Image (cartoon, rainbow, N blue to C red; front, side, top):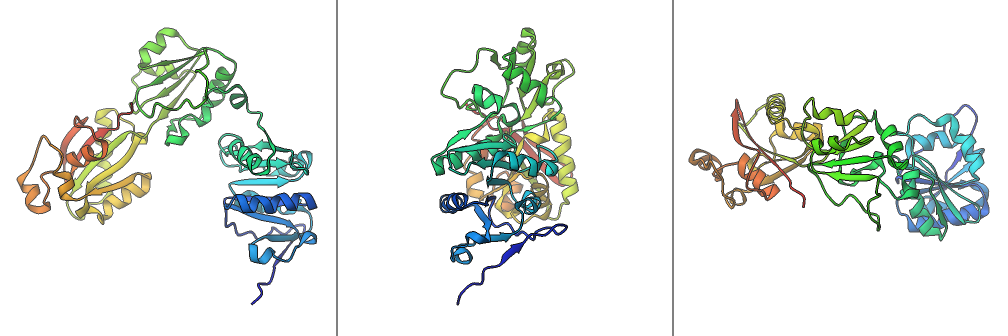
Length: 380
């Protein structure tokens, strides 16, 4: 049975009806652009292809390619909303004019990459860092045999991209307020301190030494002694008043290093569990943004309060069998816990199994219906 090809009719005053299947949209309006778009569709499975119906080749319905009639300008607003990135086989000037009214915020605007009609250049146009356009540009260029054009200063200079620092590891910044001035200090080769107390250490990926204007420190007070013009601080800790001076022109990053071990009575509410977690982290002066995982015994894999908490915060939820928990030495084994669960402990050994660390920041604190232990991942 032949699949009928539906053509999107673009009209003034009516938004196109778009259903995204992939993460990226490829749009072409010329014969050569259509050829490149179809090639990208083969090489980049996450892409949806759109081109003008006058270039129909008869296999579009079978391949899931969308055809449209009318001005491509009327198609872009819907694509902007539906996709993480747009790859446009359209002239750069035309693209700039068409997307200008659609721009909102670099944190939410999609990546936009432009490819010229001969496929000589792939150009990163919008949302180069946060939106991923620079990475997408390089991928498109590699697929088409084109030259990638990336103009972001940190990429050109091969230095730290402040807004992406640690992103591949899941690091979060505490506030975006100082991203711009700190980025300026980095690319202008001012004295910049990187203070790293925790988190992954292999964040420098260029095949060259760290730029001379950037120095790495283990402690904030050591960096303060240098009096840097900007700072990038990576820590799970809540800073004290004296340490906060480093953030006068600094960005604070939260690496995912904290692991919570939690045991609770059946039916304990998410509110009680969350309250104990927040109270405990505050006592330790740890940031909740640095929590990576919540671990427990497999008997609790369907505990609704725990499921609600990990869903709310996006934490990993890891459960272990009793024999896995009993395989690690613990400080406070309990015969009572063993009687009901088959394990001599839950919260303490769960953290130790996950982290591989035997010295925890907190061993088995009992609060109401909840028992909690806290440990950290240590990165060499």
